[in-house]
Amino acid sequence: MTAILNVTGAVTPEFLGALNQNFEGIDARLDRVSAPWEIKTADFVAVVGGQYNCDTAAGPFTATLPPSLAEGDTFTFGDFTGSWGTNLLLVDPSGNEFVDLGDGSDPAEPLKCNISAKFDLVFANGKLRVR
Image 1 (cartoon, rainbow, N blue to C red):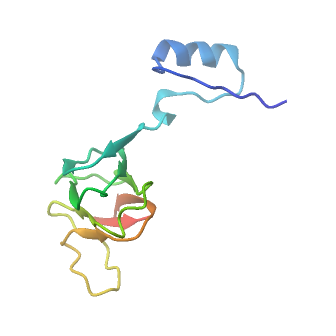
Image 2: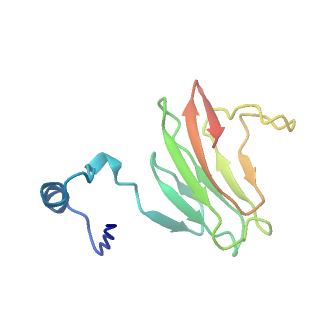
Image 3: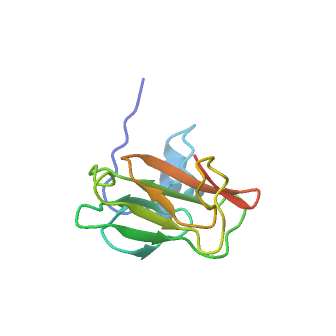
């Protein structure tokens, strides 16, 4: 039998505790709950673990990453409106570097997102990697 759980509103530690007590086999630990998607339409500073729907329909803008990153830090970006092909999303690495993408771009320059996509940026082995 498959159970479907539809939760509206805030997921509190109390709720997750009750879920753990009442549904054997469900792993509902707080560290497994992902951040909600945020809609962005202008320049912003991304936070580790953030998920961003970047709508560039009104014009290009920049997502700036924090300057100090730790191994495994992840950011998720998506173009759910299909606007990146018209107006770029730039991802500024703030002094960090992207892995060499093999396209001749400078790894310290902002990543130029010009096709509709959803991707993760992961800091691993001292570089930002697209996953």
